[in-house]
Length: 432
Image (cartoon, rainbow, N blue to C red; front, side, top):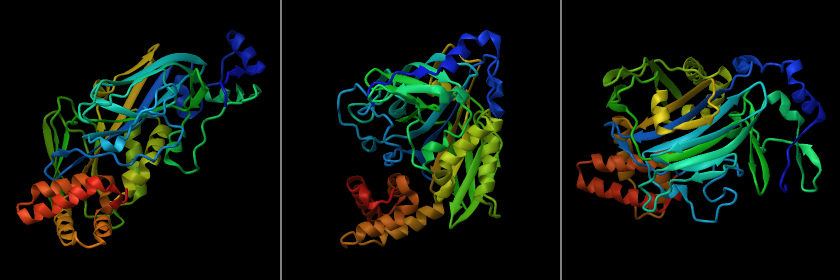
């Protein structure tokens, strides 16, 4: 489209002018708390990291770069920015900040300003269009920081009024405003399954952009206070090195189509706990229900919690591996990701989940034996490596790096180091 000018139908205009004569209908279900002129902001997202069985976090490259719709902005696709080279998969980092989405609830149209800062990281994707940004992209690929997104004025449209909003098409004719299309079943679209308001930002060149939330992603070089040590034989040690009590934790293992998990109460500051995975198998549905329940207890609406779980269900509960999910305290989230909404909302709930992947001693032994048995001079070695590392997906590189540092056999270390170099120069051998 050419520049789009938003117009309201006559009915809506009359309704706005006569607002003193009647009250707008409240939003449905869980979002009724936003009635009577309140502004409520809720946010969810994920910090993903990888640690060896000794609990030491390892850097990794976020190699999944094509899992978002094409309309998502990046430092090179934001309208009005000069063309430049930006390849997220070239940056190693301890944390991948995945898909924070910020919802707004209001029973009346209003305009707010919105900005998020990432002082210790880099912002890599976002939507809708922003007025100003600093990606935090470093020159040496490591000293990232100072990133921010400033959406400027954000118009909030109650969901029951969006059908009346019109934009201009390329010929200047009014047409209904719509959200950008998403392929049916795509995980990005699951985040829309809430009662939140529509957000609108305006690009001076291309007009209005509409979405159900503010979306952003990034990577960062910092550690979170929760550590996980895999002791072997289904035993683990969880430590909280921070000065704030953690949220609830859920230890999960997916292996051979078998699901096992256990819930842990919050850990006090500088506390630790030993936990065992249960022998009895569970189901993905039971794990999802438990996760939704904990997210709602933490402050999300049920539809938001379900949207988060449905967004990440295939990754969280479908990928083979051992991982710890834990609720990041909001104070820590606010320190890492300051969010500024003006005017300030009556309620602001931010529930970020830490996803900490690990490799158990048993997995380390099996994978080392399998990789050492591969003849790197064989023409099919790439396929053989890929087959062994497939279960680790985007964590394959740090997994091999960990094995390399742990081996006491120089021949084994040399072999694993060669595989690691192969991974870093020919990432296509691994199925991400």
